[in-house]
Image 1: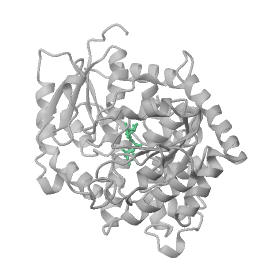
Image 2: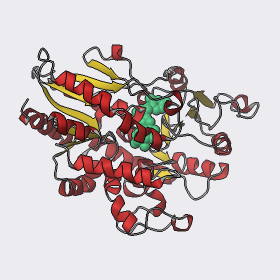
Image 3: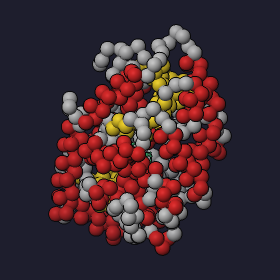
Image 4: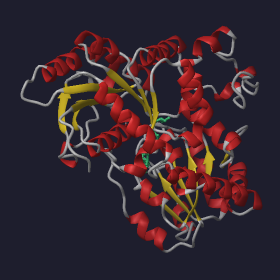
Length: 450
Ligand code: UDX
C-alpha cells in the first residue's frame, strides 16, 4: 500500500454486474495507490457497502419504476438511466464538492455508458476520466458506427450476415456489436454519445493489456485526443466482485473429484437470456458429449422460466454425476481449478479476460453487442477458442466440445492461450505494460488541480 495522497476520487459505475465489478476492482487498485475513494451508486442494483469498508458510498435515487427496473430491454434501461440519473447525480456530486471537511476531489471516473456525466462534470468544473469496461477492439467498432451506417453495413439485413466488413477484418456483418431491438436509432444514439463524450473526457481507462489489443489501442490513441491507460486485467490485481446472486461453493468440492482438464465450465454471464428450445439443445449437447460439465443456470436464463424446470425428467439422474448445475458460481475460482479444461461462454469481456488469465480455451456463443466482436477475436485473431455459429443443435454442440476438449485441434488452441496467459501475468511485473500505464494514470490524476 502506498502513502496516502490526500486526494479523493469519485467513481460512478453503471449498475450492471459486468460493469460494477470492474469499477470496484479499479477502485481497489486506485485505493492501493493512495487515493481515497467515494462511490456514487444508483439505488438500483446497489452493491453491499459493508464489503468495502475502505470506501465511502453515496446512493442516489434514480426513481426507476418497478416495471422499468425489471425490464429485459437493456437498451431502454441504459437510455433511461442516462436521463433519470442526471439530477440526483449532479446534486450528489456538487454536495460532495462543497464539503470542505473532506479531502479535495481530483476527478470523477465514470462508466463510458453514463455519457451524461461529461456535461455534469463540465458544469461543476471537475475533470472526468472514463472507464470503458469492455475491450478496446470492440470499442473501435462502436466508434465507427457513423461510418458503418454511411457504408450501408448498419442496419443490416439477414442476407448480409456472412459478408465481411472489409474495413474491420476479420469481422463479418453478423459480428457488428448491435443488440436485437425494434429501435436501432436509440442504439446508435446511445453509442454515438458514449463515444463523443469519451472523446470530450480527460482520459480513458481500459480493462485490457497492450499485448492483447496492441493495434486497437494504438488506433484509439491516434483517433482519440485523450490520454489512454490500458491497465488490465483488473481482477488479477484485485478480485472484487458484487452480485445479488450467492456463489454456490458446492461446485468446488465437485470439481476436486474430477480429472485434470476434463470439465467443461458453462456460463452465459449475468444478462443473457435464451429460448427454451436452445436451452434444451445445450442440455442434450452437453449430455451427449460425455464430457463432465459444470453448468451455471442463472434464474431467468431461460426466457419466461424460473430455473431448470424444463429439463426433461431423469436428465440429471442419467448423467450419473457427470454434470453439476448451480445458479451462480465463484467463477474466478472455477476457472483457476485444475479440473477445468474449457469454458463455454457468451463472450462477455470480463469472462473472456478471466479465461485468458487462467489459460482456459473457450467455446464462444455471443448474444449481443461487444460479445460478438470478442467472440470473433477469440476464434480468429487470438485463435484461443472456437465459435459456435452457422446453426445450433445438439450434434454441432457435441462435435465442438470434442474438437476443443478431445481432439488435436484443441491442444493447439490450448497452447496458444497458455502463451497469452503468460503475457497477461507479465503485464503486472514491475516494468510490465499495465504497471507502467497505471503509474502514468496516477501522475495524470495528480496533475489535475484540486
Ligand atoms: C455485460 C455484457 O454482457 C458484456 O457484453 C460486457 O462486456 C460486460 O457487461 P456480463 O453478461 O455480466 O457482462 O458478462 P461478463 O462481462 O463476462 O461478466 C460476468 C461476470 O460475472 C464475470 O466477472 C464473472 O466472473 C462473474 N460470474 C459469472 C460469476 O461470478 N459467477 C457466475 O456464475 C457467472
